[in-house]
Length: 185
Image 1: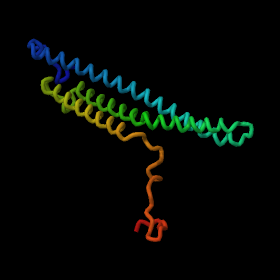
Image 2: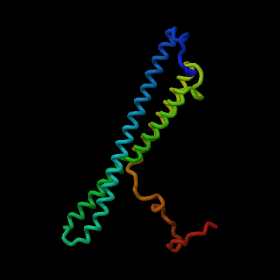
Image 3: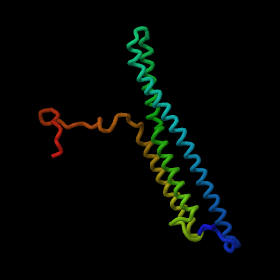
Image 4: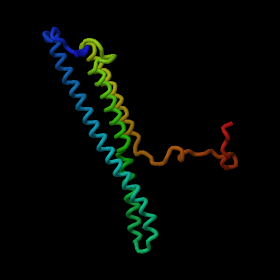
């Protein structure tokens, strides 16, 4: 089965078609390599996130348990608390979870586009001269979006671990008293 945008034997005799095909193959392989690197990055970041979260959970959980034991020195409790805070701070600083998810989303988007191109599914039907530029445009759009997302992640600073709902401030009335919740009326 020949995909509709593959170079046929008749087309492959011209120098332009051979050069385009070589460029197309190199570009496809570059995208495949990028997908592999993003998947590797995703796996590493997700592992780092899980390790950091496990350290936080275990360290924080040990503090009240060990506080009930009278023979445990206070500095041990402080050390477990400090480890929990430090691990959470490192996770917030390096954004392991968010950067892992961004890498996964980018790899998935690149793979979907490459798969549609390789199977000559719309909009990649037709000769290579028409399909390849569409592929490049779509891949570059995905890369630009990934770059913007990456910058937003790192410019936003450390992620807060406080849920958004609990950070909301309820306005006070004129007397300085929190009004009762409305019934949605």
